[in-house]
Amino acid sequence: MRTALRTAIATALVAGVAITPALTAGAAFAADGPSAAKPASAPTASAPAASTTTPARTGAGWIENWKAKPGETFVRDQVLVTGSIAKIVKVGPQHHRAYLYKQGQIVGTIDADGIAAAGQDNGEFFVLNADGTTHNWVGNSVIGKPGLYRLADGTVLELAKKDGRYGLQLVENGKGGGFKYLTGHRSVLTFGKAVVVLEQGGSFAAYLPGSAKQGAPQPVEAAGYVRTEKLPNGAQAKIFKVGDSHHRAELYKQGQRVGTVDADHRSEAGNDNGTFFVLHADGTTESWFGNYLPGAKPGVYKLVDGTTLEITKKNGRYGIQQLRWGTHGTGFTYLTGPRGVFGFNNATVVLEYDGGFAAYVHGSAKQAAPKPVTKDDACTVVTTVGVGAGTGAELTMSPNGPTATFHDAGDDKQVFGKLDRNHPSLPKNAGVIARIDNPFSATPTLYTKFEGGSAKGSTHAFPKMPKGCKLNPVKGATSNGSTGTTGNTGVTANNAGQTTVIPKGGVAAGAELGTQDDSTALIAAGAGAASLAAAGLGFVVLRRRAASRA
Image (cartoon, rainbow, N blue to C red; front, side, top):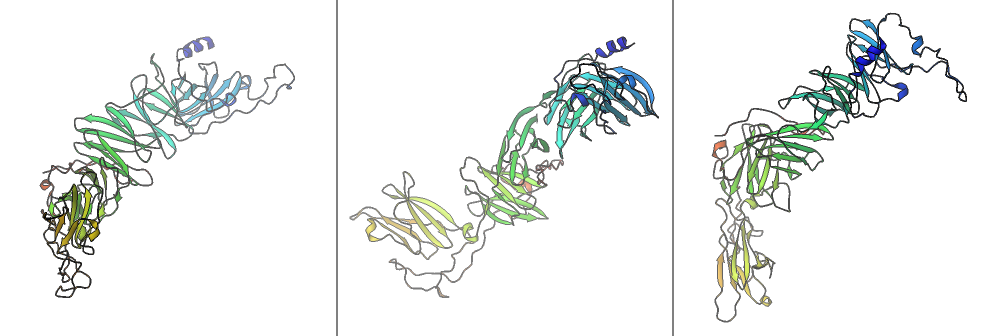
């Protein structure tokens, strides 16, 4: 009978890669199940160390002395693949126990009370189900890291780690069926026909009852896998192509999956404590840390490349538009979810539900958070003119008056000095003539003469400030604007305490989505964007149906 049983069990022997045993050989097959595994007691008698005599097999730990305990009904002896013996007893309708003996000595007890339990000994697995049925095999194991794995029958499982515990879920058609997490040092899980033993360290083994094809789980990438990117905070983004103009990124942090960003015909973004990840529908990405202005209030802001943006709020939703030429707005686009992605010139901008926003300027060595534009900034305009002798002049007009900066036309290196209200002309020893005429007026001009003799100089008007902008008051000016003369220009200050207003966009605040200039903005995001991170688990996704644009 025992020979026939050994022959039957031997058919289950399969090759595999053994994982590190959870226990030493002297405590093999100890299991985690409904009841903790009971370690075997040491033999009651042994020969002296110097003796070569075989120890007397008289203790309760030897198989010859085994007896069923009160409440147990002996079911059968089962010879395992490697020759160990399992004495299986019935305790209740859905409660069976197995006493495991190796080389005649008890090495562990497996108790399946209501759910299956398993033991492992140097790569040999023994699973006892609550109804008394068993599975026994060698190998078919893998040292697991979070990711996807394919079993010998094609079943795809995903391994993940949450709160320090590993778990597995079945993946079908790219969708998970829900994770089953460890409840102890070892758990028995079933997925279809597959019986899986999951270990505390993430290693797991799989057995396919009745199948001639066996093997260790193989790491795989999901269909459409494109690449893996490392983010500035050390997280990883696995990017998959779902279809035309549709890509998905699965985000992992410290081996744990923390979210998904789904860019379906529009750009989407995630924010993990200031680390931004943007996924575009074509699969391209941007990621950066910082450049973030949290909780920005409605107003005008400028990016490091000079792009001017206006933030507004309507019916509880924030919107954004670009301002061109200081006053012309391209039209507000309002958030339809917690986060939106926009493109303005060379910048990718992420706008949050609370008005905070971050920007990344492509190709720029200088990166920084958007800065609020003051009333003076909003009214400042700049132009550059050539003034002769290979010299250019940058003419700036603002509510604080005109400024002229001279530079070499070849390398932009500044030459001479800077002219403004306080220093409206170059000194005589400069060798050239350059001055600002009417520096306190709204229409100043720059006069320059770089050649001697009877040659005429040239005059250039400063650019006009946008409509609605006026000069700031000059300290010391009277109510009628009269002051003493300034410099050697013979002009008088002309200011009477006027105030400056922030110019409004050419499109009134509150314009709907379809009114924006599509040449400057990406499609607004938010439909599948990731929410703000909580407790370090960033990029958690808020999934909704995509909002349509006009």
